[in-house]
Image 1 (cartoon, helix red, strand yellow):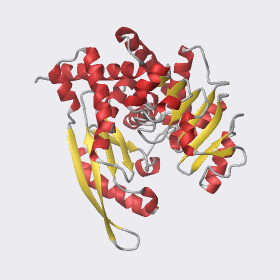
Image 2: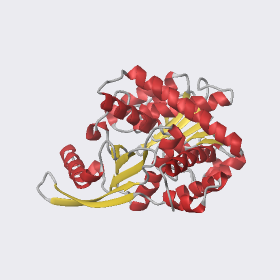
Image 3: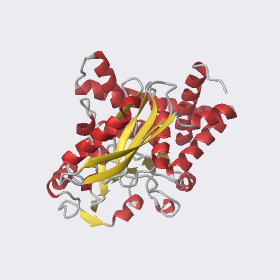
Image 4: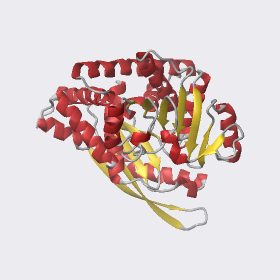
Length: 386
């Protein structure tokens, strides 16, 4: 099931639980605006190349629309649409005054030089310039882009990974556990995965397996994350790291661990591998890593899944802090950024648990009903009429 179909399915289920009016349910699914542009630019060798860029602005009932711009070969309108909608619910779950948007350019950033990437970002920004801005739609970094391409606050780089760790702490505390002494397997060792690994390691968590596109490594006694980061920085890959054994990347998701954290692409947990998952907890640091079919299989097995629209909301929450600092012209130190992030992530978890209790549902539906309800209420308060 593709990301858009899965997101729509979760939304409809939440709308049903909340008893939303059919007309408002339909209107909440329809994006506010979809933009498609051709980005033509000269390459370093003088030849011209053209890429297609998208920006989907989903909903602005709760505030300016907000969402990343990803540079990835598999960017397509459906995926951008699904991710824009996810941002609407995610910002509502985190209780920050934004709506959802998402952008993407179908390119492989590895094939482009720094100056070509810069030109691409400029061309794309010029094309959508009149439809974005601090009070309408605020772009942010995403897959294949970074704070250098798109600006940033202190603590922004680590924000999503740090948010994942605060979310994990909140969930484990609910179950009478803490990070210290538990074992973790992490799929994806880019920005989110490497920060999550570093922070879990600092808190006494045992990282037993890590994978990324270059390969996978494991060590049942725990990997020295600092040493692994240095190795990856030096060699560009996880393979040949002396402090762990090589393993098949495909086995990471079913590796023996207490907590599994998928931090890479969507749809990695599906009906083919869900039965073999051995983790007791899954923290969705990636967007949409668990297929709805896998969701059902894992729930039946008693695996607790912390959903993406909450677990990876640290990035957008710190983007909100960045926006606040810009408006005030007053910079926070990193400690304040992290403290506020922890406060927001912890509060959101308790709000989700509240929804789970009132509607007798799992954490994913708890998060979706919380987000959808907030957006629906804001829409009605703004004088919505069908």
